[in-house]
Image (cartoon, rainbow, N blue to C red; front, side):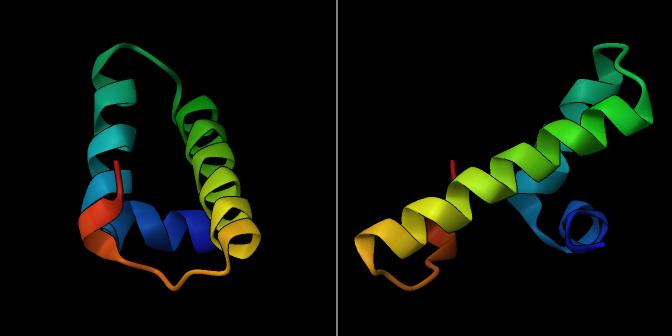
Length: 58
């Protein structure tokens, strides 16, 4: 559910999701890729003990 929310509200994740859909990926596959991207982001934030900064989102 967090990923569905992110694809609607987070500009970086939304752009990534839309790019995958435009490339012909199925919605569930694109959503799973976004899940992985969010998980990697969360792990990096925990590892580096930093707070979320939307200007640094790739």
